[in-house]
Length: 601
Image 1 (tube, one colour):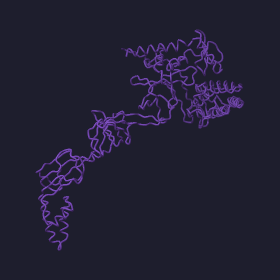
Image 2 (cartoon, helix red, strand yellow; image 1 turned 90 degrees about the horizontal axis):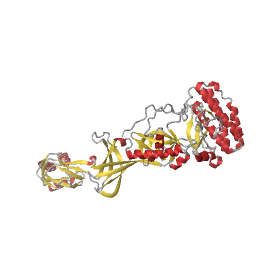
Image 3 (cartoon, one colour; image 1 turned 60 degrees about the vertical axis):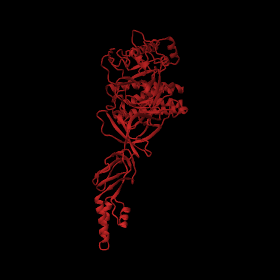
Image 4 (cartoon, helix red, strand yellow; image 1 turned 60 degrees about the horizontal axis):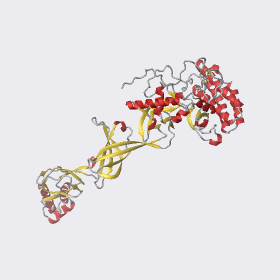
C-alpha cells in the first residue's frame, strides 16, 4: 500500500509539473497564440476581466474576448473554479498519453461471462420401481446386484405364486363350461391379465391344459438398479418393490449460482460446460429451471439444465464447469471500458472530458457500476450516452487533482464553498409565459435559416439570415420575465446580438461557421432554460467540427444536415438531446460539505 501511495504521489508531482508548472511557459503561450487561443495573464491587483462565453479567459483590463470577440466582463472575486474539473494544457495531455473514448460509440454486442460449477445428477422424472404384480416367493433372480443395467421387457425374476396356481385352475374349469357360459372363461382370463400375465402364456395354458407352477417377472422400465430390495426365497406381496431403477438416457446438470448473478440468468440461457472425466469435449445445454430457494449455508441457488446421455458417458456426481455468456445490445445499455474505472472500495470513479473547452478539462465523476460485460462494465448511473471518458491516464489526472486540492479518489471530501454552476443550466420553464416561449421559438426559426444557409455553404444567405436574427431579436419581450430569468435572458440576448452582428459583417464562410458555433451555444442554452412550448428541436453534435473539438447546433428535423462542413460531410453528426414540451434541465450536483479525509497507515 505504501509503495502504491508513493508511486501515485510521484506521478502526481510529474503531472502537476506538466499541468501547472508549464502553464506560463512562453513557448506554450506562443504556440497557443499561433492557434488564436492565447490566454491573457492576470495581474495580482486590480479587476479581473473574463468572457461570459469562455470563462477560462482571464485579463487584467477590459477588451474583447480573443476567442469569440465579445466584450469582456468583470469577474466576481468570490467565483472559484469547479473543484470537480481539472484543466490541463494540450502539451501535458500529450506527454501523459491520455486517451479517451466516447461512451456508446460502438454498435456491436458485448457479453457478460458467468462462470459456474456443479455436478451431474440423475433426472428424477426417469426414476421407477419394479414391483411384484402378484404375491409369491422369489425362486430365482436374473438381476442380482446394484448398478446392473435393466432393459424394458427383460426377465428379472422367477416367482412361485399359489394365487396364480388357483387362477389357472379356475381358467381350466371355466373352459369345460365354455359352451354354457362363455363369459366365465373371459373373466378367468382377465384375472390373469390383471396380474401382468402375457396373452401368450394364457393361450399356452389353455392349449396344454397343464398348470404352470412358476411365472417369469419382466421389467416394466429400463434403467440402472440403484437399490435391490429382495433376495431369492423372499416372499413378496402384490405391489411390493423388487428393485429401484434410474434411467440415465437423460441427466440433469445442476450448477451453483451466487445471488449477484441470479438477476442475470434466465430460463432458456445457453450454458457450455466441460467435465474433467471427458477431456477435450464441450457440451451445450440450456437452463430449464432456477431453484426459487437459496441455500442458507452456501448462499447459492441451483440452476438446472438437461442434456441427452444416450451412451451413458455422463454419470451422476461428475464435476462440471460451465460458462454462461449473456449478450447485450450495445445500443440498449451504457458501458465503459474497464480501464476507465478507478475503484475506491464501494465507489467507482471515472474522468469525463468536458466538451467544447479551449483548454483540455477533465471532470471527476462518481458512477454506479453494473454487470461485467467482457472488457466493459455496465454503467447504471453517472454517465450518459455520448460522453467522452478517459480510458488511459486516469491515475495521472487523479494524482494531479489531489496535489491541486481538487476532488480525487484520495481527496474526495474537499471542503467546497461553492461549486461552479457554469456547466449547469437553470430551469425557468415552469414560470416562463407561453407568449415568451412562442417569441423565443420564432427567433429560433430565424436561427434555423442561418443553419440552412451554412449547410448550403452560402455565405451571402448566411449574412442575410444573421440580419433576420437581429431584426427578430427585438420582438422578444423581456418584460414578460421576472427577476433571475430576466437577467439571464439579457445576458443571452447580448451574446446573440454580438455573434449575429459578426456573422452579418463577415464575408468568410469559415469565420461565419466559427461564430455560428458560439451562437449555437447561446441558442441551445436559451431554449433549454426557457422552453419552446409544444414545439420540438434537436440538439445535434459533430465531433469533427471546430478542429476535432466538436460543436453543436439546433435543428427542427432529426435528420443530420451538418452546417460546419456542408456538402463535404453533410451527414456527419448525432442527435444528442431532444428539446420538447417535457424537457427539463438536470439539477446541479449537491455541494460537498464534509471535511478533507485523513488517511491512517
